[in-house]
Image (cartoon, rainbow, N blue to C red; front, side, top):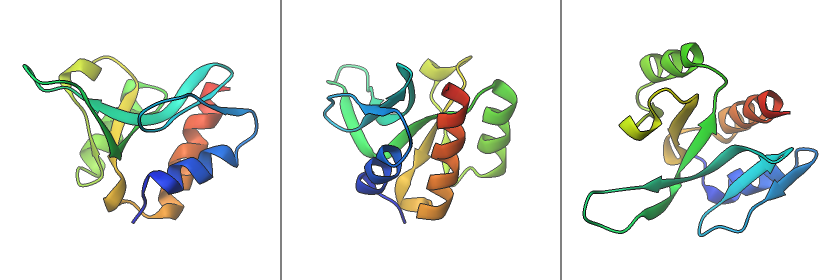
Length: 111
């Protein structure tokens, strides 16, 4: 089980990572985001920053679909992310080891 503190610790252990001021977490490398808190939007309500859900850069649509179909308990998406190489990750459902692997992959793809 992972949480926002694990995201922060793992992200800051990677070279050249910058944390952007946020109500949750937001990490970038070379000015490109690779992991951040999910800004949940519900029609008619203010946006809510979810620190129990991480948005991860995954590189391309094929990888996105593989994660969504292969591990639906961990990953989901939202129509506002259609066509973007991003998935949402339920942090309470993922191990810290798997989170580290996913974040390192995202970091590598954004460098």
